[in-house]
Each structure stands twice: as C-alpha cells, then as structure tokens.
Image (cartoon, rainbow, N blue to C red; front, side):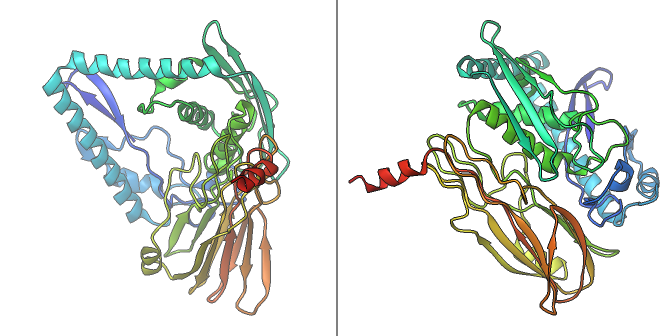
Length: 418
C-alpha cells in the first residue's frame, strides 16, 4: 500500500510512504491463497491492479468489497481483508505524521538531503564490497528439474557488477515463476548482507549493480503466469544461487515450507523454519527462518486457541545439518493434528535436491512432508501438494537443513587438538 505525502498546503508531492503485509486469504482455488497446483494468476486470488483505496479521506469500503468479491474464486474472509487494509492505512498514516514531524523539526531541505546521503552511503558500501569480490557463476536446480542460473561479472575499474540470469529456465506451467521485482529484492538482500556496516536497507545498494533477467524466463514471466511460489520459493533459490556464485556460504534450507489449511470458516498460512548454511568462519544456525522469509511462526497457544488443530510436536532435527569444518544448521520437525475436516496444502522445495555444501562441506538433508491418517496409514506428499484432512489426521513437515562448509576432517582435527 502506497500513500503520498504532500506539503503543508496539500499541493506539492514530497514523498511516498508504503507498507507491505501478507494477507493470508485473498481467494483463489485453495484456502489460504497459496494453491500448490495453480497454473494462472487468476487461480491464486483476487488480482489488484493500481486500486484507489482511500479517496478524499474516505475509505472506499463498498468498492473494496466489490473488488474482493470479484472473479471465479473470491476471498473467503472479507472482514479480515478489510481489517488488514485498515491496519496498513494506519501504518502509512503514522509514516506520514512522522515525516511531517521531522520536516517541521529539521526543515524540508535537510530531510531531503539526508535521504540522498543515506542512498549515497549505501551505494559506496556496495562498491567497497565489489572491490574484494571475484567473478563467479552458479546453477541451482529445483525439485522439478528447472533451474536458476547466474553469472556475476565484476568491473573493478568502474566498481560495478553485472548480474546475468541468462540460462535460467523458461517460464513454467507451474506457479514457481517469479516477477522480476522478486529477483531485484533477492539481489538487494544478498549484497546488503555482505556489508559489515549497519546501514538502512535502501535503493542505493542497487546503483552499482546491473541486473539482467531474460524476458519470458521463470524470473520474468508473462501474464497470466502463476506466481504464488515465486516470492516464497524461487526467491529463496535466487538468494542461494547468488551466494553460490559469490562463494560466500553454503545453501540454507532454501524453502519457506509454506503450509496452509482451511475451508469456508478457517484459513491459515505459516512458513516453517529450517537450517541456514555454514560459512568460512561460522556454523549454520538451526531452526530459523532463512534469507528471504521475513516472517515468524504463530505462538502455539494462539494457534490452538484460534484454530481447531493441536500442535503435537515442534522440535529440532538434531544432526541433520551438512557436515564440514563448519556444520550447516539443523532443520525442524512439526506435527499438527486436525480436529475438524479441512483442506491442507504444502508449497515447498528441497524435497529431492539437497541444499548444497561449499568448499568440501556436505550438503544439507532434504525435507519431507507426509500425512498420518487416524487409521494408521501414511500418505507421502510431493514438494507441492494438497490433501483433505479429517479429524484425527496429522500433517507432518520435516524441513531441510543447511549445507556445511569446508572439509569435515578439519573439524575433527581441530577438536582433537589440546
């Protein structure tokens, strides 16, 4: 959601403030709006294209209701959508107020100058990183055989880099296509993590970077391509592919393990933690939301209070991380028992292809998803799958671990030294 910020007279446009939120239900063919088998964006929920939400200070509730009720698969939870949108409006309004406050205190010229300084500083920080990086390339396959390919070329004289995704798979019939904005966000994230200084995340980081994404590839798909896994899964893979090309660290779990369930009354969506990759001087971290995830899990008490499920177990998969001089982080195991009939779905990765190790380190272990029926039978699920749950059934998610870094013998030798 974007809100303009005008001067005191309401005439000159000075800034924009924005807030981004994940709405867990916007329609589509599956409750929770993360369908495993969508083949067009229309199946993934209501498509909003440049919609005016507030006009002249009036929240356009009637028009919003019409928007979220449109199409073959409208929202299942209109009141939640309205509440979420109002919360974003409030967040933006707070941003507007704070901008006016600092303008009143320091003056518009000073505020605009410092916004430029922040970006200029970020640009220089990235150029300093480029001064010590080398050219590299990497290819990373998905479970379905498609791949992300990247070549990074450093121009030391100009202190710039070209990041070329030529060789990446063409647009897919599945929903793992990613809008190019996701690719740019992943590039921004990776290079920001290489900066030692604690700087605000901003567009200045991208100024020294030239990003090339082939049109019609899975990273620049054409409408009406399905894209629901593009941010949550493909974005993770782009991140690890970049780290692989830069030889910075081993792969993280490389998936968000997107778990959704619901029906007409309930809709729920969560991402589940796994292991992060090890690096040249650090072990990976166990059971964390890695890289592009940017979410947290619901507290067990809140989950069980609001939804007809029981969280039976949530634990670390000890020893699952890739071995090496530095070990990869361990994955997790999560068991949720259903108390009412509902549809459950998983959109995930690294169920077949393990997260890579680096510099002689072992790969992490793959994830796995299955359902244990009340009658004792077991149903194995694919990386992206959907299933009907009945009372007493248990949905089990085993998340991938991170890759190791360096020869495992070096860790053993270091442990033997007095």
